[in-house]
Length: 200
Image (cartoon, rainbow, N blue to C red; front, side):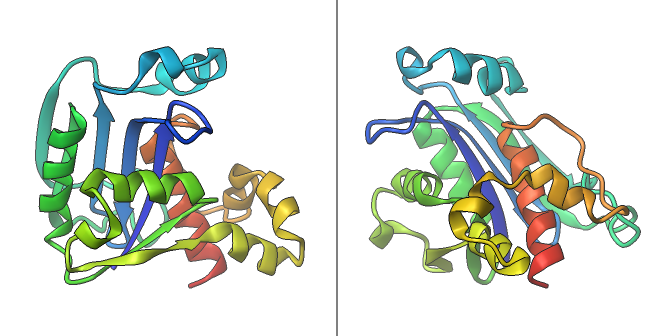
């Protein structure tokens, strides 16, 4: 099972901390978490304006839905509702990790997919401790769609890095993604849409 994910964090440096985590499974099940113990003093003006303002959960809590309604809309997915365990939560790193482990257990095997995932995947693994602490059903590697973008458009990876992800999604007129850029769940849905366009 591919799990498309994105994280938001407090800066591009080795001591960065997670602000949020968004995941969308290929079958549409979601996991969304905001952390209440990130290092707020690390957040510069850009992070305040583009990430913190796009957080959705006001206070510590958890909702566990028994089904999902896809926000990624297309002819094939609008009516495609499945039962599933889809947490939406705000909590500490430990609380998020415990819920995330339970969410991942519903899948026989997990392959993470992200976009320019160097920081994202390290921070995701850090939730568990080390790569050796990942659940047994989870691959310790991550597929990076920036390479798919470079290959598809015949451009260098550096140029692919700067290519608008929203413009790529807009090339598929039957796909619309609602939400705010730099919200981790929105960005995870964009990653899913791009992977499905370019790879599947």
